[in-house]
Length: 240
Image (cartoon, rainbow, N blue to C red; front, side):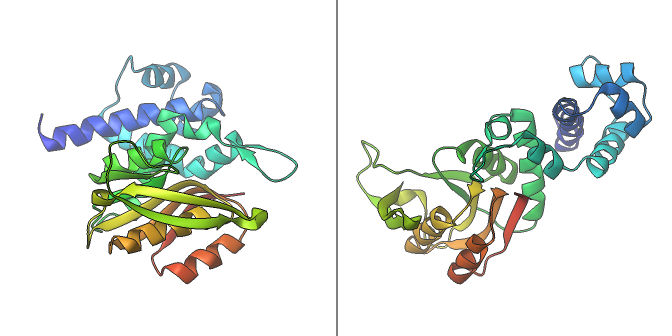
């Protein structure tokens, strides 16, 4: 299949993903009012029984995302507790939603060279994987333990907040190379400490940090901390 044809198919599949995501928050009646299309047509599109034309797929995608931003969908799926912590499982395990978010992230870094997408295990892995695929980049996962079978590691040790607990992140030494262009991805940031550790891992490898993409952020102090460590752009999809 030619590349132009693949792009056309991708646009149609993106619309199906979008419809399946938004219909958990909106009825077909409401979506019909937003799009101007009959309920039966929207239902057929969402189920994949009928595929729209290339032009209609693109138009519908823009109409829906203009009226229903991804940020709104993400916020609606978070479950907050009294302490300000949140459960994001309905976001980070939804394949259709992650696909849409990853495409938005990829657009932010369009035209920039990205060799590697790096995240910390475990909840950041699904989103980072989708973004890496969109950008055609390799995936680097920093873990809190040394994997058996890997001989050499890059390691960063840091203190977790006010708990005085010490933690470490490890990546195989050959997973990042000198002058690699690295995008750091995180599903959530509260203090910024994990992201700083990821920045330091990239610096140890003498790699270049292209930017940071964060799905959900709480508070404000973390941004100042990160900006002291890097001048790379920081993008946040949703702030709580």
